[in-house]
Amino acid sequence: MLTLSILIPLLASLGLFGWSNVTKEKARLVALGASTLSFLCLIIVWIGFDTGSEAPAFQSVAEVGWIDALGVAWRVGVDGMSLAVSLMSGLLFLCSIAWPAETKGRARQYYGWFLFLQGVSLGLFLSLDLLVFYVFFDLTLVGMYFLIGRWGHDQAEYAALKFFVYTLAGSLAILLAILGLVLANGTLTFDIRELIAVQPLGGTDLRSSLILFGFLVGFAIKTPLVPFHTWLPLAHVEAPGPASAVLAGVLLKMGTYGMVRIPFQMMRETFAAYAFPLAIVALVAILWGSLVALAQTNLKRRIAYTSVNHMGYTVLGIAAAGAMIGSESVRTLALSGAVTEMVAHGLITGALFLIAGSFYTRAGTYDLSRFGGLARLTPLLMVAYFLAAFASFGLPGLAGFVAEFQIFAGSFGVYPIVAAIGLLGLVITAALFLMMGQTIFFGETKPEIAAIKDLKPAEIWPLAVLLVLVVLIGIAPGWLLDLIQTGSAFAPFKTGGGPQ
Image 1 (tube, rainbow, N blue to C red):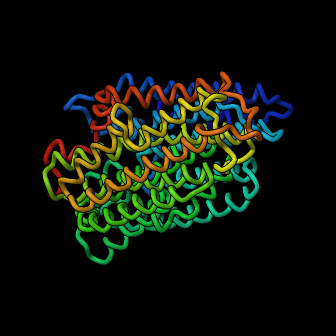
Image 2 (image 1 turned 90 degrees about the vertical axis):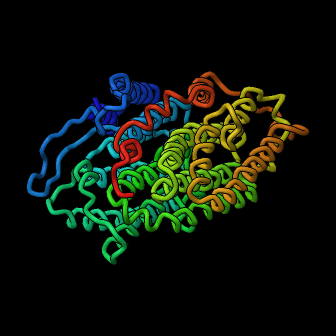
Image 3 (image 1 turned 180 degrees about the vertical axis):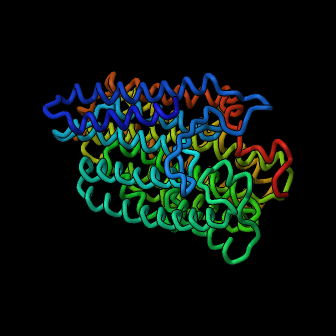
């Protein structure tokens, strides 16, 4: 099922690339069908997933030999973290493909690149081989490069180039770190399960420190953390709305997912030694991202900077969990919050970027000064915006609160001062979203936007799916937390094993 969830969108994308004279509607239906089948494969895996205390670290594992001399194979499998992130990603791709988009007369290519990106993104989250992980990590750059460059706005080509160059530099750092980690192992293998079990490197000697630094820099660029974030706002502003939703909801999670899966799990002792500096970097991202977002007058750029802020929360939780100080329960809470934030942020910010795309479609601008008084004209759009906004700054009863409560409660038990200062980010985030909502929906209606229409049915159902999940997780999060806390990432906390 896991292999099919990767191959179905990839094969469908090849079919679209080779299918000439196809209409926009047929291309969209093919993309929707392939994306749905891929997501259903993940649902089947989820139905059969064991969340019991005796569950194996990885489940639904499939392995086929590939390059035996190098210890490389097609290995796929899931633990709770990877399954949760994969399910969120599959759903967000489905909603983004369904979103009515301006394809500029190239519908076949547009939907083909979306399916390609879905396939390689799921491949990264489901892979149990480090080299295959890296291959998929790089291929995601290709899909997003074309989606931004060919279907973006005024500076699309420059934004696509900056995105590609920045993130490629990060991936090269990760490749060097992977090679260093694998070569430090007694047996040549890229099997993620084995590398987690043997912990090839530890301590703070020069080699271990450099390899950890390579991973953290590469994943920090992808996440992105300050000061490696500068590619993100331009990429978001220039990308079409659905591509922005996937960029924020899925691609940014590759940085934090990779941080947990590789250095956090495979280099626990070294990671613990540098956890506090990482927490400080996360704090800077939280405060910088929220303050800079508050100053933005461009709707999409403001939402983009909140992603820097929210991914800072995620990294703070990862740093606290990896510090190996404080009780196991608080570190478990911090890591659970970090993974929950990956899922919640994907759903919430994905919805926010789709909403931003609907504004651009109607008004042809993201300039906040051009909006005002839309509450009477677009009541459904207003409800969707405020629900996503409230979730983004952690209002109780919504998914953002479940994630951020765990992160800060866990972090307080490890780095109380850092966590206390980080709470300021929540206050600033609340202010910036409420101010933006007031600007757009309240006051007098501007004459130039007086003819704006409310959400169409093709826009309502993707937003409804995402936001219903946001509410469901907020009200009854137990099913998600049980899933997330099953498997390899949480094994040391549950068993008391691993370096202490």
